[in-house]
Length: 339
Image 1 (tube, rainbow, N blue to C red):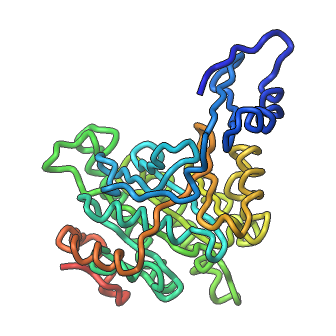
Image 2 (cartoon, rainbow, N blue to C red; image 1 turned 30 degrees about the vertical axis):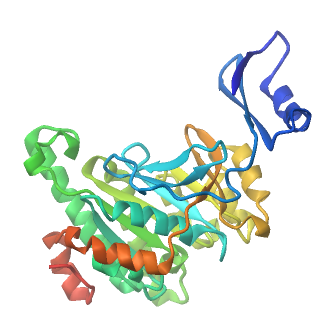
């Protein structure tokens, strides 16, 4: 890559439009143009497509607590999800688009770390049950999810009281011996929490949405992190989804079945990222566009097979924290808890 200082009258869009011609003239796979600061453009050339056949790293963990190498960026650099830097994520994608592959890579990378993993999988636990031995709790329907989310909100408020008493602004300011374990909450298929078939389900859906929003608002400083995934995430699911989306700073969009989901995931962050996501074809399964306040990239996650997922869960089951704050509520809802 190299930097170019713009001449009077030039704008970054001039270089963006010229990128395909530069790639053709240089005989490279791709030329990407970004503007890191006013008056400067960064031109990056990729000789080949790293997303064609990404090779898994020797270890999924990125060497830092709550940081995981989940795949590869189009630049060839590792794709790292760092929950300390971007605490809450929204992941969307149609069936066989790569969404589940990314979730597996993230959970597999978190499993060896001293963190609690909590699952909400309202399709009967079909996806997250693979990691059952490594989960501190798993809700498999909306009623269980509402109970579990309420317990997580209580846990977060308790941590707030601890930090207030210690005169620190977050759990990272607490001494090692008094710092509570970080909790990563993985919500698979968010639509199942918000869809309402009749009036009797409205209160449950509203309770679930309110709890998720509170966790997103309070959780980052108190060691509670959200990873929310779904095939469809649109405004038709209600205002709660839109309010939750605003709290999820990290966004990943695979190929989606409807433009509203891509718009919900990326539209408020970067119009170029939205266009790139809408251009993903069925033949590019696994390819995703990730965006945050820092910019956007194309990427692809590493494949973790079902057998590998089960093996990882069994290998690190001994690291599963027992959280009494959740266990009291979990038992009442019939959810599994580790002792």
